[in-house]
Length: 443
Image 1: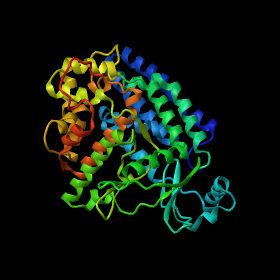
Image 2: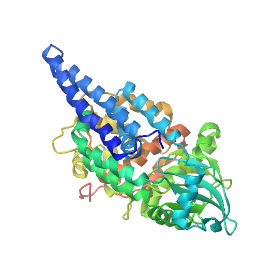
Image 3: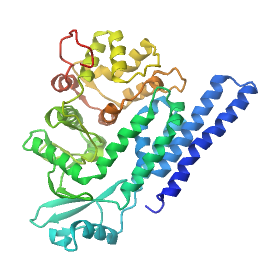
Image 4: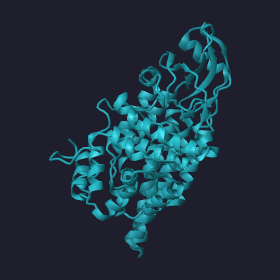
């Protein structure tokens, strides 16, 4: 981790360059405007340069700043490709380049967390990690009773660095409004900060994973490895063997890709109803297709706790949209906080933006594809202030739900899955199959 800014002073200084740089660009823009440049051209240039600097700094900081960048990347279709492309590349490179902890450090953490006799818990322990990420890394081992296990170890100091990032980023709310006028960034940051604090607590992750494991034990479609031991910074779970979903994407048959995509959707939609939680990190690395055909699921550090299941408004507004009542849809989106009070939206533009994403719920069978996704991105890749994407807000309670849907659609398009997705929405999403009534969308 030594190549990344981690000391609080260094991180604060790096973040401080953002508002100062923005002030300089604003003055420069004003000068050019006075010199005859159009207001729209000046605004576009300020937005472009602001986005460029924000994403550059977020990527360099990693940790909490990078997590915010990942959350904001769901809006990247509203940004020009010359900004969004390099930004995605930066995040990918940082994720792939997480250097593993030296074996001596791993042993020290295990001794601090499990005691000097930590090796008594294991018959074998592989010092080389099988996976590494921004918060911790995973080692393969054999538990003392002979079971193969995964040992997840948190990087020392990861928590302080993440919380420091969020505290600093919370001061930059006005800057983000330059990019996305409809977005209130502070509640988004607050929600992310709360969730990351949970992600750092491996006991909380253990509780979530155990709940999923118990609910899906003996399930014909899914398998979740159960928790064997845990404390705040070390998590020991059953080892999951199977073909990574990335391999299915790369070389799976059409039938395999169709089934994997359908089960991914079923898992995400049924979990809030069955477990009261939503797995909030659905990227291919967290899924395995097992030899018996079940979909194995990993990493429950990020979950959205939904004790009442999916928000009813989600299903209700989708149904009403399909029925063509845009007036009620707009009113419902305002009630839920997707459209802030001072923002006026073009209803036709909103309908055109939402239609492709609602389409899989309107037809009996749907095929996701990269081409379909590119068409949707091209339709909204417009930096002008009146772009509908830039006018929408993301309410804190929907941060993780939206992240899951955006990431899930991306995986489905990589798989090229054809399946009866509407059946899963009818079965698991409250409000979608209900007959229209006098109730308000949020109730």
